[in-house]
Length: 563
Image: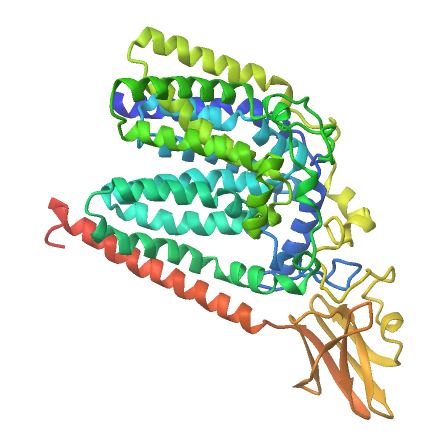
């Protein structure tokens, strides 16, 4: 009983530590951040599409003045699925968003603690988890930029690292399953974070494989778990990658990363702000790594140098050396001198802002904080060090725990702002199809204005539009939707060819002379159908393999040998 209480105390303290971080979420209504209003509107449209039966959700039919935007085909869907679940449970849209943010933040502290416990004791692991939570970049993600997909990613990254350790060390059933699920979670929570954390994850996996005993018998199942996680996310990943050239963001850069290098001085310290990243050093937001983070980097560098001189590096020391190296490589990647690397690794351009690599410094410093504390043997000295680190963490972040303004906005505020609600929820229409130059001011549901033909029995319900049209000669008609391969047009029940018309990129289709019943409905592209199938197959395999592994585990235990 006493041991269980001791194990729960660090988790309770982590729970208490996030109270100052999340107290700004308590007032009713939602607050404004760079992307927060877009997330609110997207969640509203996402839930509407789910309610209409669209699954997986790929296109917001009512966005872009009712002409439809395929935004959910490309932007991390897990955040909106979770938000929709809470809204289904009768939370407001704003409350649903805040609940996802809160649970992701709390969960990230717990998942970091679980990972660090594979290396360190309870106290050291707790300190690392708190340092992971109290990083300026993470607080900026919550209350300045509103990158809430990244907030979810901060939960899944340590969860993935912990499951990798558990499987390679113990070949545990739980490790295998969590590798697959956390890989899925990371991909669907924030695709940019996959690019950001790819190299650190690869280096960490490489180190673990070198250290692993009986690697041959573990390697195939280990790789399979990753493949199953990727396969589970294929419903989103395949279209997001292979159909990217169909929208503007796949053809040109919205932001030029070369204009957004933070200076090294800004990484050490830069004033807190709620404005934007701009070319040059006069940004309206902070890019600092963090006071406590720099503290543990300096301390770990000194300790590693000392241990290199005095003795051979242990397993924990090798990991600390790796994360210290990852930290400095990440700092380099945020400097203009790394531009050749960005040019060579073309995926980096999708990160858009080099300072987004601050996410990796947050991870690295959390491990280093735990490692430094673990080196102290004396209880008194450890207490002093822990108190000092916590004091620096809380004090240096004390002014970053609030929103830009105290005002909160109800759900109705976002609905009544028609320019926002019926907009594109992006910066420059980058999520619109490439055939669209400009969103028409006329609402897409006004079919007479868009089609220019006499129709009868017009009916538009969600993603299904039906009407009757009569022509005396062959005609090319245009529907009130932007052309995209997701749309299918049926004339008298038979599919017809569709194509974009003009610079507006409206959905065009031919009709022959006579009276016809026209249906415009959503369909799936071949790539999307393959992705959906791979996800279903992967889910089935995960369930089957999990049941077999669990049964084998139970049979290996004494009381279950005769089961």
